[in-house]
Length: 298
View 1 (spheres, helix red, strand yellow):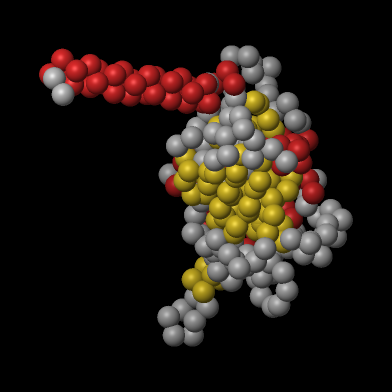
View 2: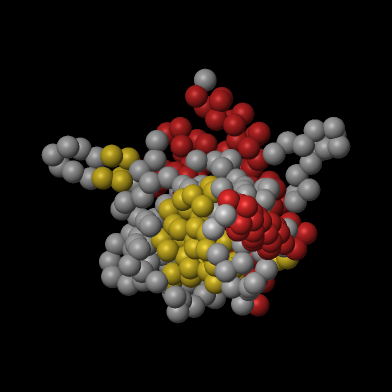
């Protein structure tokens, strides 16, 4: 083959490669075009069959939320401020009428031992995703962090792709068995488990990482189970006749939990939660919590 012919063949091959590359890039751009992403609410998308969601508790304080986009279009998913993880087949008649346990939380922190005992299904968990910018990390609701962020409380998932969120949680039923990865759980709106607005606020704050997990847990048990502060102070995470007892909560965590309970209670009584100067300054739960925390530690 002559040099001239070889050059023409090479040109055609390169040109074909460029065309394939350009069309492939265009197709990908069309596939991921932000304008093409459909805006959906998390639980509504579950109900409509647009997404498949698995809720897998890691322990009493953490869980993974695995979300799959079942459609052929990108989805911009608005994440819930608060949620609950409940054992599959559990039935609820409102908080206090729960036959099964559950978790509530905000994504993050290590496991909490000694939260329950006995046989039976695990307790309900609660949490929030309002401060999560995406999926891809561990839910530490404390907080699921991620790299697919679309802004505060939302995430984007490409067509037929799967993302994982790590969330921090709190348990909603003191004394029931701790959740484990072997237990079958599902995620539901928090009001399926409790309609207490104070608990919803706690889960939302946990999801936005405005309060620490252990502080949120003390406040939650005080509200959901009526545990008095002295009972929480006497609760041990570890009890050993050899190495001694390890308290479940520190004095600082309990003082902070009291501050948080006072705050969410006042918010429930006055949902506006704003002074006359709210147009000049927006005081968030985190602001008040951090101020109280600094005073406790000062």
